[in-house]
Image 1: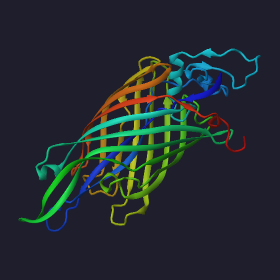
Image 2: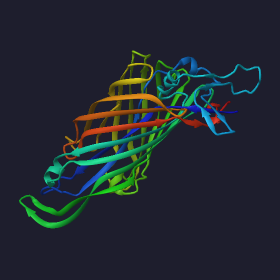
Image 3: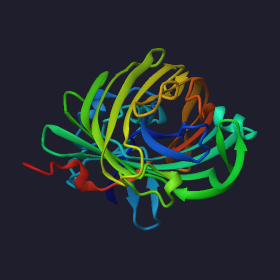
Length: 372
């Protein structure tokens, strides 16, 4: 039997888009740019057991090399001495306790699919119906022990968008205020968006429940495979989080705040100056299942004109932890109504599906990289 760590971290990401229509003089300029900002999301289901957090020898998986099977609920010493106590099986509830801490010990391959319905003045002007955008986001969450007392959590956020992207053909159509484009067509495209690299740091005491805190840096890279699907800029800024993770029949509440400023990229594209405040509010029905307001993202695009700055969703969410074979998996669904959105082009409703399996973590991730 060869011991392999298995870690879970329930963190998600949310893609926010906005369409800006320039009000040129004279009249309305219908050449749009759609710019995406990738915003972080933490998703929790249960509390994290501090006694399990303190154990340096916690191993949630033992791989049987004879048949490739994995026991996802095993606790065994990392030493192989025969005088060590025999491993015991963790219950699903105990595993679920460890899924909740956004800056904890466990690894998870967080995957979510967002379907969002957009409308606004720009579509009304063009006589277009609501547009449906879909984004699948893959977010491997990887905590490392940077030093004996400092934990580092790295999370790349990789979005794959399927959008009705606008294409504009200019013409000489006249109206009293000036010229209009000959046509604006919307064609479905599937492209890679801007990748976000999320980095958080906290001392061992800061990341220990029930109250956890972390500080860090978030970087948004100009990686979109098509101009319409990204900002055209490289951006970076600070982030911070604070959460209270209550026991069953209690609450999980908290917030994550991030900000991006662009520092390089296409000079013809709009600068990035964007804030994201994500709030999380769940009531724990039991050790495995939560219900609440979900974990939506409030965003502010400070480069936009008045009326196009804020995006504010409210909603309901449900999630639980189950098993696929021996592996724990978090599944969930959330629905949003946007009570404030950009006038020109903004989200109206949203639906999110969550599927987040546990993945094996390398043994070195628990050992201090510096000073160990």
